[in-house]
Length: 217
Image 1 (tube, one colour):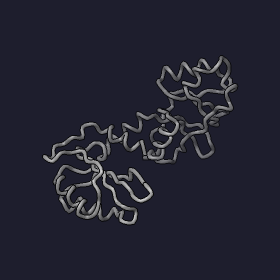
Image 2: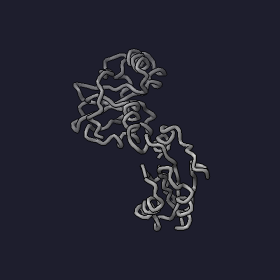
Image 3: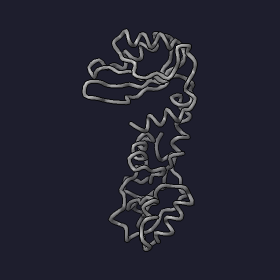
């Protein structure tokens, strides 16, 4: 799950002396949201393709005050990339060393393809979002409730933290869903949303719909 295992190098980085027009066209050809500028192998920053399209003709150096300093270090986890994709509205992120040397890039597709292998996204199941107070929150208890009803947890994450409550989203197997629902309520949890019906039919068909919820955190 380390970034260094997913680095690609086929998308060229640019020097400050390269033209804005060339960089914009390359980004458009590749279908990527940003271009990256380097100097002597050191990462300087990125510029969005949409910004380049609206910029006057010239060299990339003329836009240096607009360089966006976002990148991910090669030793990071792929989980660390998710916030960068979301924050910078990017589908490509530069990868650098601790010394800020430019090493290549990772794309959003790389991350989607990797996560699609995980049971959290690949296994058929149901999504349940529950709410409780921060003081009552216990992953041990949540796990026990699911497993005591002979079901399995494929993944879970905290989907919202509010002043007086916390919401936890679970991906679980399809066994005994109604019983799980009732047990959570009996233990004082509020069921906020549930993506399955009372006949226990499977409603989750698109694993990337679930991943989108994860990206919005």
